[in-house]
Image (cartoon, rainbow, N blue to C red; front, side):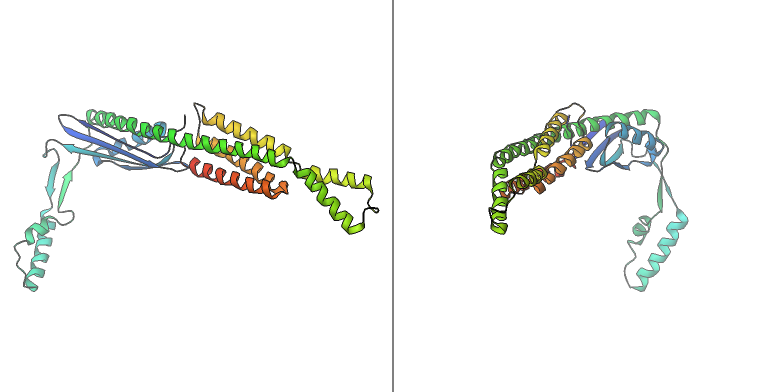
Length: 291
């Protein structure tokens, strides 16, 4: 099943003690790049959460934010650093007086200065971790559904472009019917102009022509390209489809298309090859978003 690497999911849960919220966002990446923002109370669980993400999310640049809003606002004990507060207050009051500014708001300003008030955050208990993990899985479920829905759209587009390359290959086969006779006629015309009809060794000419035309033969490239496109469609519809495998197949498709274009020696076929390349480039762009 095709899944997009782009995803979003949010989960919430309320208990008697707190409200838990987990938000998961992801963009495309070759590997799993995990960014976690979690309360300090759950810092000892970070490794467990990372392992859980690696097991379920696989790849992508993923940002996960966990927030906890406690019902009891006194759940976190606050400590005031009185020595630091006095220093801030004294300095701010002196500055205010030197500027002739009323010092009425100095105390409030000093109270909000960095590290004056600190909160004691104890490690969360197992019951709280269980609530967070349950909330994480709620968000993960929504996140995975988002990836699946996006994957359906991507699969449809990839399938259409892959089929377009196969359709263009049929065009090449139609255009190719007159290619060899035209090459033969053109070479013979050049020889006749260069050395004259009587001077041409017919047997040698046929031998050289067969050798030259064999070098321009694109039968193998057409067979391999069709095979790669069919394999691409098969993997696209497989239950274990993944972007990396499809990326490798698209590289092989590109090699055959390039060789076909370089050997064609025909303006119409080369124009069709350009259209194939356009479709393949769009396929490669979309594959960057496939899980």
